[in-house]
Image 1 (cartoon, rainbow, N blue to C red):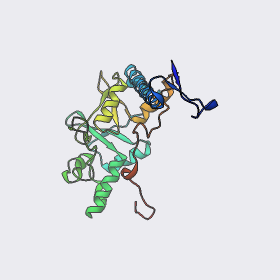
Image 2: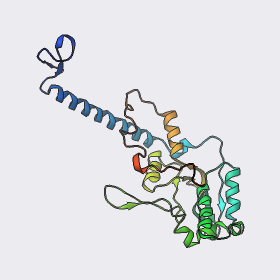
Image 3: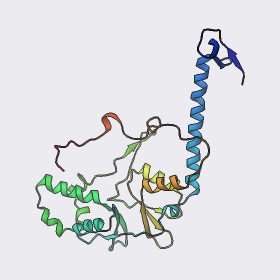
Image 4: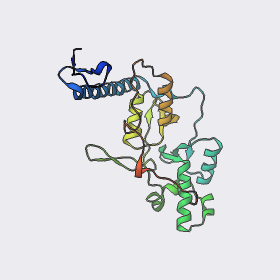
Length: 250
């Protein structure tokens, strides 16, 4: 790489500053920015390539358990089962339709309790209401259980899915890249993994599962991750951050 020598008086040893020929100091800064962008794109492609070679099987634990709820059981019992088994979500099975119809999460039960408090309804009735009853209640579905708000991408078209009305899953032999696309594009928190041969649920994966697998198995010698999460636009900042104050009620 050729360099141009600037007149004495600038910074550097002996008042001499070396800069790329033809570009000056500004050209050097531009070159560094371009190089950084190239490295950033290379890092993205390296991760995509890794995710394309890994299947959902690879993130499943050697020993694990799956909880599936029949929609006929009381929702209160389902919540206790989630807590007892230390699980955040469980697929829902409809015996009449003979198929999975959605997902129930711990947050859903909290939202239902919030609905009962806001409407003044008798919370004791939850003991007798089944999961199916709650999911069939349009008032509850249209308020507190309205999840997965759609996102607008560059096309301008809203994209999203409500897992209380639609069961979205992925085959165990699908790539992690496919799983990531479903989680992101459909704004999902949980994604069930099914065995293609008999449609049995093997696990429910999240972004955390995929990130843990990436950290444990992705190997890259090049310095591809020097950017901060802020520079990459990852996370929530400023006025978009929602906070709770000490005096607020649960």
